[in-house]
Length: 215
Image: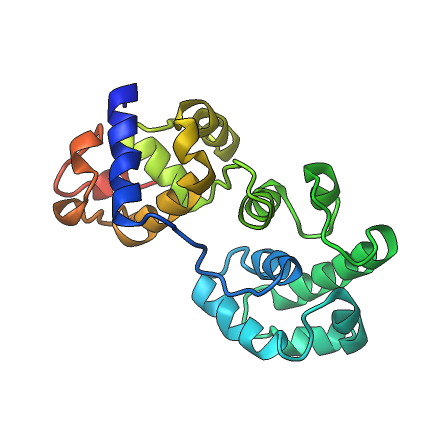
């Protein structure tokens, strides 16, 4: 995908959805961090179902610790890998209180030092909570980046770096939301909905069905 096509691609996505948002439900930076940590190998719908029970009771590091690890696990047991996630979130809350004054840190290094927080989670928090132009590459963005020719790469880091180089600065802060939503609802893995794709004209591979190319 050349520069002209990339500009058209994002201009079209922006026109259709000027202010894209994460589908995770949260009301604070800590709630966002917790929700993203819980979302690994889980759907946003599933995470929201659990946090609608958890957050009214415990939505700060101190309140999570007051529940205890087992109590926390009971609130999130509908999510896959819930015991591991409860352990990681509980330890993360301890570190936030002991090392960061109860506030979610703003640096990548500090975020990635938290249990259960990898590069993707850190990128989401830095982007959504703090407005930094990061690119959180999940399976949807990896697929869209490769399939469309927007940002080909053999792994998520290569796709992330390609996107940071190729996405025009004017679109960079919102780009990962547009790409996730496009991959989730249009450029799907098994059968991309090319017939209703708004950015088909800019795609390097605009076939009616591309199931064989799914990533």
